[in-house]
Amino acid sequence: MKILEKDTLEAIMPGTTHRLDMGNVEAIIFYEDAEKAHMLLPDGKAYSGKWELRERGYSVDWTNGPSATWQLGRADGSIHYLDVEGSPRARVTAIEYANTAGLPKT
Image (tube, rainbow, N blue to C red; front, side, top):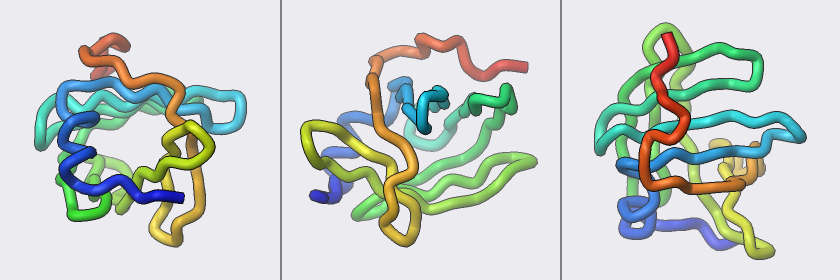
């Protein structure tokens, strides 16, 4: 899997909504700008927090939620979210250049 680097992530993250397939359920992340993000999980839990790009991925610290480091990788014509061990956790089904999900949900 080819890991996407910072310059690519800068083009596909700030100001976009990522729709993720997590095994037949959808999670949604809206990267509001270069610092703030909002997430809606399949079980209805919603988080907002701070995120920051790294050379090969990004880190996120959700307010009242988990902190994590992620990478995005490309293989077989798809982009995948990879955990810190490099294991695929979700497949990107859409990148939309707006807040199409109306996040944050309160």
